[in-house]
Length: 276
Image (cartoon, rainbow, N blue to C red; front, side):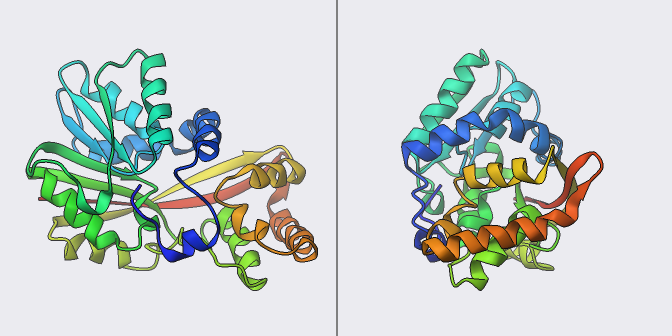
């Protein structure tokens, strides 16, 4: 990814670190299960098919890169870009293990993509656009490199209320004075749509895509949250006493999702697509 907003930087999280890349790699299978259907829909709307040339912006460890690479086949290609070299190393290794030879990686700033104009059939961005300090600038850069008639598609989280796993922990951290992550910066009504339109993209469509997460128990859920590179950071910045109390409050608020079969937590993405 490109440089993040001040909110992200204030958490002390270093997206480009090897630790983050390693943790992201270990969680790929779980993300594929939860995010897979929405990823496939994003690729559908972006018209990604056999022979397509695809740019994946803020690719991270390349989960969605592999989805796209399988679609485009041997006659197509996918270029994964991110600001983290360690993330892209993990993405390239994942492609190698999957037997995919049509994936390239390049460390690159998303706000000023150093690529030829009109050179891709589709540009995608999964759960990265809302983290940029200037998403409209990123979208303009994405629009520049896609060919006329090509599609730009992005998947983001909607609102904190519709994503309680993230919303609750970030809300608790905010109450204790810790800077929140901008996970929901594009989730309010019409914000994502207007960002796409302001970038010059046409025929913009935004869909709501729901999903669910299952955990065996509240303790398992809390353990997974504490392992999350993103979500734990605002609370970890607190003093020891405040940190302990914050986790108690997070656990209490999440307990509302406990049922006879474990913990079921809803979530919602917004999926936007526009045409050049």
